[in-house]
Length: 298
Image 1 (cartoon, rainbow, N blue to C red):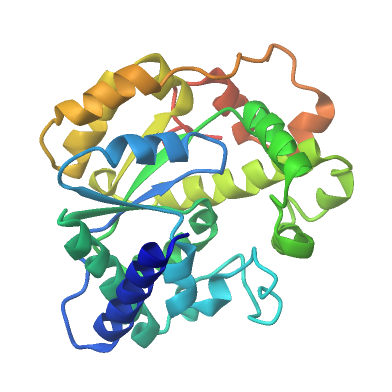
Image 2: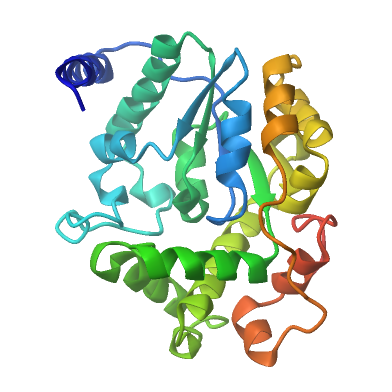
């Protein structure tokens, strides 16, 4: 990073520190993209970022850490920060919540785009916490079949620290799984990165679906990865209607040129017994694709 960029970055950080503590307005009606990592959350967020009215925050961990250090489950500081995977209404500190909300609003001011959309997949485990801080929030859920997600996580985890520094994130996932009778024995079955990815998909997806099923229809929209990449223009048009913004040719051009299947579909006719045990009841629904997860009895 050159000197000019360093100075600009420090200036923005200083402005943010001041803005966050002043009694200024907070963000209104933020939209959160939710869904397990490797499910299409990034390409969806990048597509929406092309809209002239949308400020898109792609995994703004630094903003979360600034307000709630305990949201860190990735870095070498996670253990000292007592980082938590799962946060509930009981974890809300409204002073910290106001700070985060103001930081979100400042991002829209700096961008000159009034609507805020945020994407951070770990938020799947913190949705009640988020709703308490942002009671007017809305949610876009994108899901992908669990076997493809597990395969993608496997590839990522073999190249780097998908499960956090010193596997801290994995430790937190294990603790979370062990707090439920349905999943408490599953970590012992996870002998490969693929198994670990499938368990993360299950825990994450069940958390999202359980939360969204309690909301009014107007508060969330659900789509699938397959639907998005097979018909990106139509899918993004529906999402823009949900957000409440007009069509933008920049968005349509981007999805037309960029959004395409970049991995082949797996042969999913036969799910192994082990995959079914780890993946749970939603796995088959995710494999069927296009039928939705939140409105189906399981």
